[in-house]
Length: 417
Image (cartoon, rainbow, N blue to C red; front, side, top):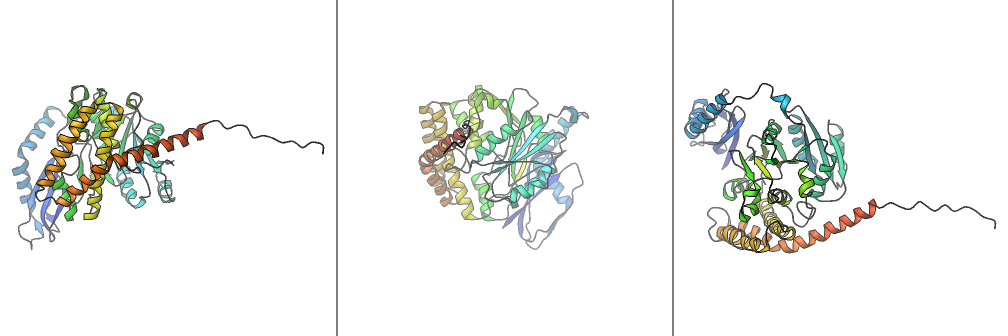
């Protein structure tokens, strides 16, 4: 059965949970003064019971998360937030890259426009659209619309870097719903001037289907740490550098724009819109850390995501994940951020053997066919990487031709016949 997903602010009045006739369990994102602390679970043991009382909800939260609540209360008393907080917030450029997903984009824009942040610009990058629906939607909103004709998510991200007016640029996807405090969390992550990139929680907005439950609990969902931490790239081993997906995710990431001058822009041969199908975000976090810079993970900067609802969609996603991760490792080898020998050892022992084959042999309750999908994607990754490289080279060459100065047109004057 489905799992109902809700959020609870513990310092406010807790109400009964209703409408449980089709749910066997409730998953609560518990917050304390806005800060997400973790998940609490309330079982619905009686299929005929449609309501869980407020008292039982509160008792369950205290039972399961009492230590976190006490720690948060003490931290709040010892380090209260400044009343002048708004004056210290840096301006941020918020970017949503999209292509032909206007219906999904509407919900994202509603959440973006509701952000609790005083100093931001909003930029929509329309990537090689096939119609004008996104442009028509954005024209009605207080945001900036930019059209990028070169197809590929990383082309769109690079265009955003060029268009951004502020020193911090935050990216989210066109199917995400940022929390109202998202940008405040990002700003908190950048409080340390050494931090070059920030990422945060990506939590499921619903767990209504078997595929969504499998992805969240069997596969591990997306980035979900509830503690904040700094990652110093100069202190990481080769293996830790290559597991860069542990430090940031494209649906929820922000950068100091100046870091791109040091490490370069996003690789246009990676991510959605190319044969590699992903990994542009992961490769950027890897490159920043490999250069010795620091990143930060801040759970207060979080967004809601709707996982793939159908089994077929989830299978395609996992195949894309395998294809993208293989292409990512090839990109790391090409760039020389980690030695080829260490990448080969990591790919065999950590990724293929330690992750994919281990889950294939002992899948538990996670369907083996989904592990096979990811493994097939991994095997396809060298061919996808080559195809994406050729596509990127063609687009770069076309851009170079377009930027070359054109000769003045020849004027022909009439003469005596």
